[in-house]
Length: 427
Image 1 (cartoon, rainbow, N blue to C red):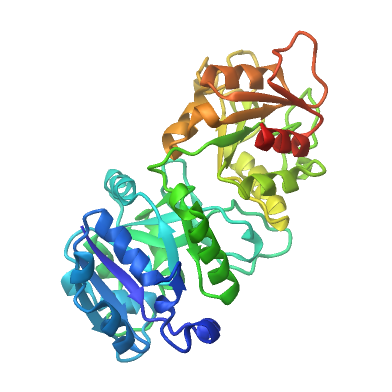
Image 2 (cartoon, rainbow, N blue to C red):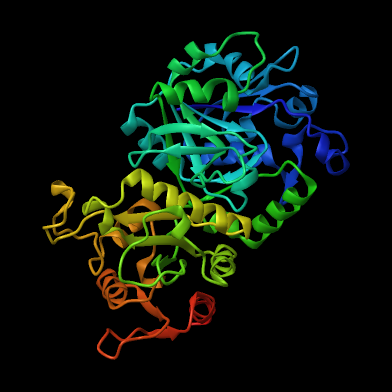
């Protein structure tokens, strides 16, 4: 495969750090962010890279030359006037005649490009966006994706008061097929995010690859300092999915949500974060652990809640967590229920399955999707079925809240999620 890097930005907010050089020459760990991107591509066997330049191209050309120092061939194209990400990419059409990677030049990333390319090929989409949740969804442009990864909608900021959307953002790295150029106009200033992607999503031509790997925009002095610290600590490299990561699996009701059985919540109004829950998730986010929700949702099989209704509940959950600077890396739910006889039930969902806890199916699915090290992972729940699911998956078990005498004894028992997380991190 080939690659294109959108490197035309001036980086006004970084001028005090870069001395007025292009944004892509801002240094992380002593090297320009653009050099980190080229090295990542070279490690994955990408030899032909097009740099789409704008502001002070001579500074970039002087540093990188023809790319031979990194074992790649660099082609530099300079726009005469700012064309935006879509217009800039169109300039590289003649060189990008096969599926190609594309990066925003101000993103520091270390991801498994082979896995990304395989996902793209399997979906057959014109474009695949690398996506992930972040810790500030309310002031971010958000996207929606179906369970198969197909992008269904975009929600640009600002978001209306009271509106909740799932926490998933475009991270600034893509795979495109050459057919993308049919939707870009030569010489016209336009952006991919707002000018191209919404129309492609409406056509069903975009997919999203959710990853827990490291991708961060470093376009302000504060973000640059944070990314530089992450690089020097080794965190960026540790989060690559080629290296198995541990996860803390979380049940929802009684762990995050202030809800008591019997019954199941059926509307966003019924979802209320427990005191300290958001801070506990943020604490997980500060470590190398993934935070993964795994929840039984038999109300769907019973016909009492639709999948769309559940998405609205989880959208509120995402926003409440985001307001506290916290995020879940992924959400898994089981829609099945084995017992029949409910009015309005969905027959095809009234089955026995491996994903419904106490089965380990959701944990194992997350393991496949995120390359999780189960031996270093934990299940946190408020019920016997959570502990049994954790044991079946081979992870540590942590129970929270009141514990019944005849339930499975967890390795850790804590009064709530904040105490549970701290106990796990100290274990």
